[in-house]
Amino acid sequence: MTTGEVARACGVSADTIRYYEKHGVIASVRSSNGYRAYPDDVVRRVSILRRALAIGFSVEDVAGFFRQRNAGHPPCRKVRAVAEILRDWDVRLAGGEPAHLLEAL
Image 1: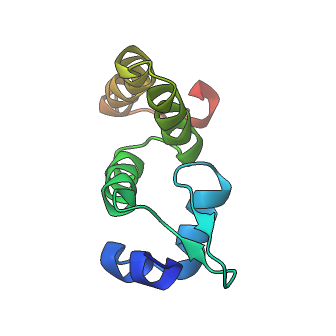
Image 2: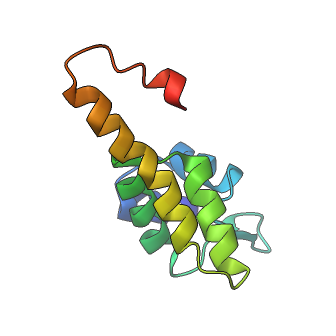
């Protein structure tokens, strides 16, 4: 798939796809004409990333999880550890006072 095809399939811009590649979430190879070519599973990866971003993970978090998985090490415990921050943030927000979430990063 080309960058444009991936972008259309994922509902994002081509710049967004290049940004995700730059940060290591997805990868491409260059075809003989110099265009990026993405593997078939790229749409699934971008979908996972978009859902993770929506609940508070960073691009760097997800890129790390994928790197760990690609190395043959399931990232489940790391995913859970990062998600723990989200639970803490919910508790802070429920308190009605300023939650100081930036300081919790």
